[in-house]
Amino acid sequence: MPGRGLVLDPFPGAGLHAGEERPVRRGRIVDPESCGRLLGRIADAALGPDRSDSVIVLSHPVLAGAEHRTAARALLAGLGTTRVLVLSSARAAAAYAGPRDAGPLLVVDMGAELTEVTLLVNGLVADARQAESGLDDLDRLDPAKLPEVLVRTVLDMITSMWRHDRHGAIRGALRKGPVLAGGGALRADVTDRIAHRLGTRVRLADDPSTTVVRGAGQILSSVLRHRAASPDHPGRPR
Picture 1 (cartoon, helix red, strand yellow):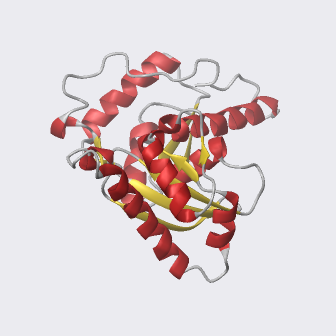
Picture 2 (cartoon, rainbow, N blue to C red):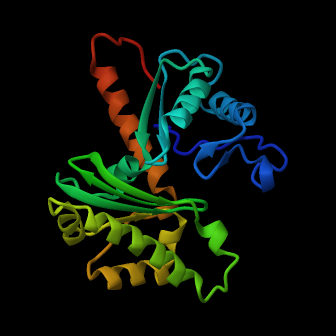
């Protein structure tokens, strides 16, 4: 939240972050009722009871289907906010950690339950791959094997995209250096292997595990500045 930074759930429910009670799994809302309560508590802490003239940015996995995006929009609409902006997690990561020039950019997001590789061209998703596995799954492996398995998953997706790239965008993105995000990007044994196998440098944010949410925050700040400067919005948006 602009001016306050990250606002977390002040009263997390018992068992919310363990087992089957997590409202979001593999990037999909599996328990709308629980997810609604969670969002409501965060909105109360961040915005208070009056949520008029407020804006929320929602980021979602790049290959999330329309059904899941619609479900998320419906939950956020129930919070009473004025406007909801929806964008992919890859675009949010690029906003925070990517170069400011246009052109192709590769974003590799290695999260707890999903691993995604996205090709952005001039800010738009040109191609994407997703593996429904992440650090939580790989933690069950021999720790010595985890880096190699994660890197192989990423490289297989990049290779698949390369084979379908007819305009050289992947090659240009690799020359620029991919953005690495998610908890997997905190591991030097993973990031060093990716850089070595691809033969290029990689781009890391200060805290890769929060790259997406911080990028969404930057986009939110930009929207709020624009609204504040607009004569059509005399109030102070949040």
